[in-house]
Image 1 (cartoon, helix red, strand yellow):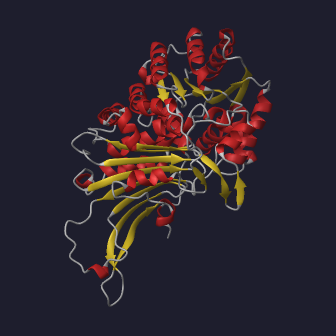
Image 2: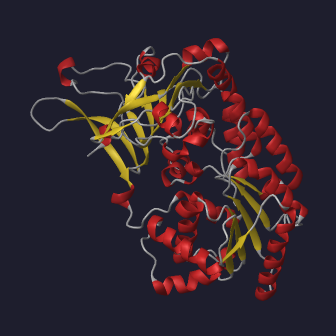
Image 3: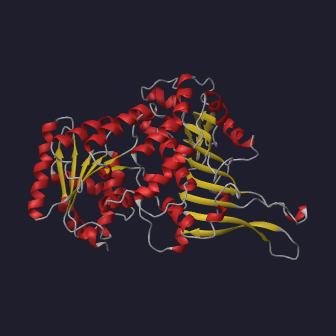
Length: 507
């Protein structure tokens, strides 16, 4: 048990307390942290939103959400009796500076009751257009002045493009010190993503192979079987590139490609990630055409059910039925430094694809001289390291071995680190890890403002090219496929193919 946490009173103020993010992620995460003893004895959860609710009504709503979405299952009365009384709610107009006096008074009341100052975490689980006004009003109310105790958590999207990201960074940096800012990307809190650094830097056998001398190419795939659904209003102004690649997938790439940090401090780790983004090759209008593919799903069948195409969904929800928004993106990146020069990083993401999975595949170069007869290796493949993030959590090193029998036949076998088979304890959800780190004041798994700006700078030529050039072939892939044919051609022209994990890693 961390005594620093247990002895430090903590107040969570959740803007957007009645919203979907709190219901599905934040409330279950905080409750699970409570169940496992990670919350201090003196804590409070203050929700705020436009709905007119009492404390008891909000507590009842939170319990219902936790019962539905928590990994620990339905709440038990004896446990809830210890958790529920810490929940409070205030209806508030976040754009009205006067309403913030509510939080000033309630925080003071709690600190007087506890006879100790509290860490106060302001979580902005609201639409991005409210980020600036909430930050400014917190400052006007004097709620951000204590840089050692006041912290603010900003959800994605952080800006809509490079210029808006710079503006938001400038505003936040004018109000908060860097140690107060937590720019959250929940992918960095996933257990397997965190294990990438442990796997690389805690094992002497890996780092000598982690470069262009041994690695042929890297693939990062985050595929979704679901469509856009009720997020279409937001998604149509975003698209796959903004929604997934600019943040989640580039963060995974940075974790794979970063140089070894000199220590495990937040600043050192984040410095190395920024180095990767700065080293990545920038796009020109010509290279955008050669190294990127976009797509939009049409109608099809998913698990025996007919599903509409994106444009049909758009028309039903009052969005432009000729929308140019991409629901699929595949991009070839290069990191121009000594470690990775010439090694392509292929990133793809999309909706309404054949399977939902988040997988990183590192393909090693072939042996320099194959000594065995050709007939021994019908199923032979190059060595791969397969890092499954979800739904399976595992790390698999695929190597060649002799198949049992009198004949010499080579076969691919997996050396597997499987979470389910290795550990009895259930892995925490990403938001549990990240909320705990905010409480601890540990920014290692959070993005920094300059890192966000570098990511935007990298993708802006692609965004500009796609937005200025209407796609004439949308929709160009059907539901339950692996995306547009051009995505396969993107890797095929380099002599590769997309790995359709997790099918290949099934036992």
